[in-house]
Length: 176
Image (cartoon, rainbow, N blue to C red):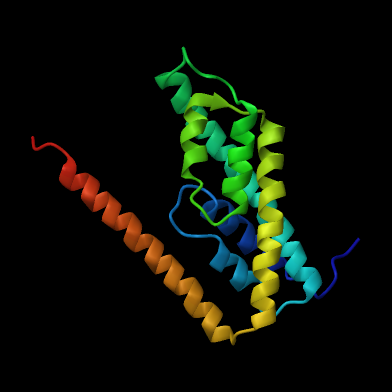
């Protein structure tokens, strides 16, 4: 079985790790990566990138669950328990809307969500969000240089925020 010639395998291979990284705690937003990947593509490829992006978001959520769960097992083992239903509602809401996902990550220290349920919650919320973003961007259809500027601005902006936080955290440390 061979892949169709129109399938951008290299782009998909580059997109997947970027999608996982930007859907984790790294302060670079994923949406500009999605816009870059889907710019000037057919509708089928846009949908394929959106599905892959939602799968990568679920994978990044599981990575966060593992890392933050380990912190929780060490820090608050006596009060750690299974995730209540409202946790999944909060995860769905934060994944669907353009609001920070940090409350869910903080709750991962305290709660132990079911792997498949947590991944499915993130996937189910991110897929319609990504489809809406790419469809609106495709309808607006800005020139390629605008997409490039949006991606660069988001990367630079994310790094500036991250560096500013690190510098502020370093200033707050006690003097030795």
